Length: 143
Image (cartoon, rainbow, N blue to C red; front, side):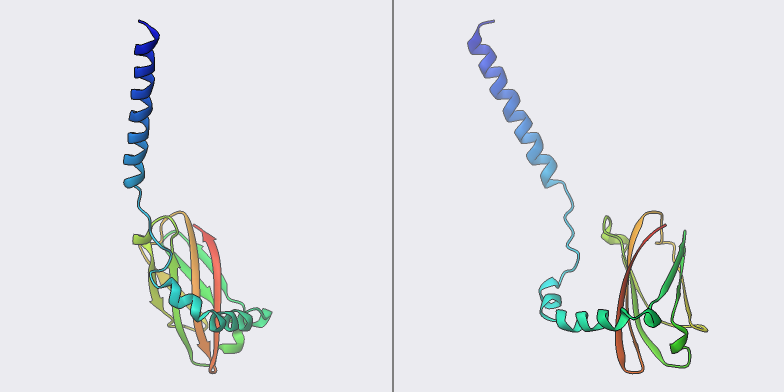
């Protein structure tokens, strides 16, 4: 085999490799973290204020997670207050597992049972209001 055939084979292998890469890239699932990310950026000052309210040690939430369930303990200072808000469980690698639940406290504790809480890395985003004051806490958990 002379050098002309070898060059043609190298070019064909290179083109096959490029076409394989293009095919694999088109098969990747690309999910955005949020569909309305621009609106969220515009309202970031409100989010920053919520985070500042949650930075005080007396306003911190405690999250205990097990396979299939999670328990969120709210501060004792707000036991007699009306606490409203929602809890979002965000799975970065699989958007189909994301879910949101409203806050419904039972003696300062929110218990969440879900078959969607599978093993892996989760971000828990908690938006809550107590005594007219907004709070936001984000925690990373591994089940």
